[in-house]
Image (tube, rainbow, N blue to C red; front, side, top):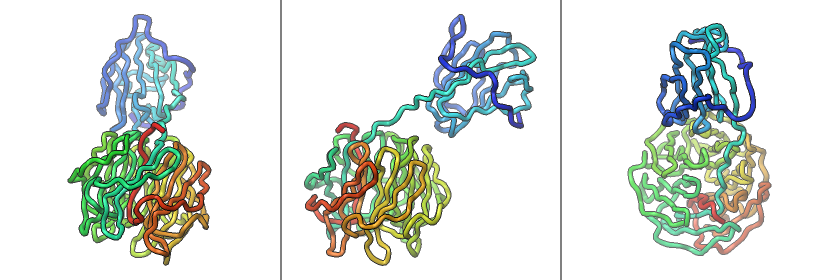
Length: 420
């Protein structure tokens, strides 16, 4: 089938009707092809791939087939209807019929040879579920001045707890992100050599023992939640800057390397943004500091470089705030800086905002309290520090709070728990 088909003219709102005799609902379809039969309903899950659906080669007026976007992913991986020799809305099957709107449902009814198959209803479920935001955060690992494995929990009011020790291999310059909706993962880093270990954090903030063998060993990378329940680690250095990434599924399993995700660099930052679970990597070091960013779709696909997003710098931190926006803060640019850059809910990075607490590099940041964020620790003019700065749900950074655990740098942080 080739060539576009005109917009469907048979549309209605409301509930998709069942056939008079009742439809037979089939198991969820995850394959890339389906041969559909009249009288059946199909939940089409295109999370991993698009799907071509072949309709019956013969039909009788009144035959019905219902197709439902099982995982709200048709907008990413569309379905294609092959009418298999019969007409579809009055056009023959040389026309391409794609449905590419997330949350869509089709009630196809055969009307006869002239018009053929037609949607008696072609509706979109506008009520898209919104993932509950994380309420708590955890800072962990770092250099103080030796490598440490301590962690500090942050409650839903932004109060940082005292040190907890013994949380896996002591290291610095790793990445961390939320996954599974209410858990977190720390991975990679530097112990005197590059490592690829990871440590899962449960929804009570307890850090698990090391898991090994999770892609290329490296440090100076960044990580973010995407799709609300998965995570992505990206960039870093193995001795040379790299542009590879590793996806983490909703169970915390780290996938093998994916290459070719924008300019190779080290010491960027990353955070989630948007109402549908996107992420952004920003800034970093390529031999000199850069200000480029790379957006990540809610299916974990990293886009090409976007340049010119505020002052070039490295060794900064980033977090989600306000439920659908992000903030980059602090870093190094021929010296320590205290500037921040807000990111809109469409991934647009704002100009520099200065004067947001102690200038420092190598801090960490995470969301907390559902719609706020916290920056903490890092290396300031007086050395390693334990100060934190809260960020309200409008992106305004507060003055320093002192005395929150062991002063250190090159640590990481992530959100966890949907319970306050």
